[in-house]
Amino acid sequence: MTDKEKCILCKHSCCKFCGFTTSEMSGRSLEFYIARGCKVLRCDQDGISLYRVYIPNVCVHLIEGEGCSIYERRPLACIEAGPEDPIISDVCKLKEG
Image (cartoon, rainbow, N blue to C red; front, top):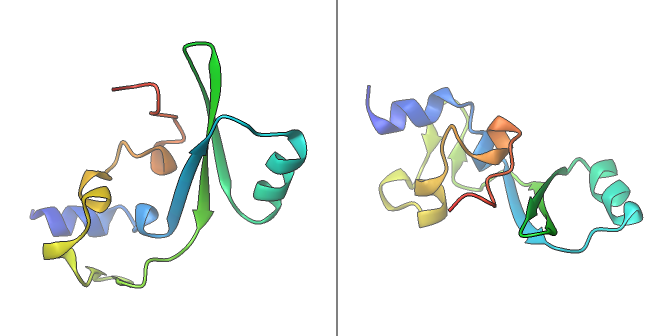
């Protein structure tokens, strides 16, 4: 099985969200993101709470059922995404190297 075939098997979860990390998240902000379909994961790192916010956003290069139309020259963030990506596994990976 090729890497691109493996990519298609994940149902393109990482291609349907973009995200950012913040150390500040009020209860109202959390409600705001969740109400808009975002996924928010929290981790504690060195006594500081970090939040990873995933915003629904389908990549313009995604062709459903076929995968990435720029797969051979996709960005590094896409190369590094995989089955251990937090959006797929529901586990915050920020505290891991």
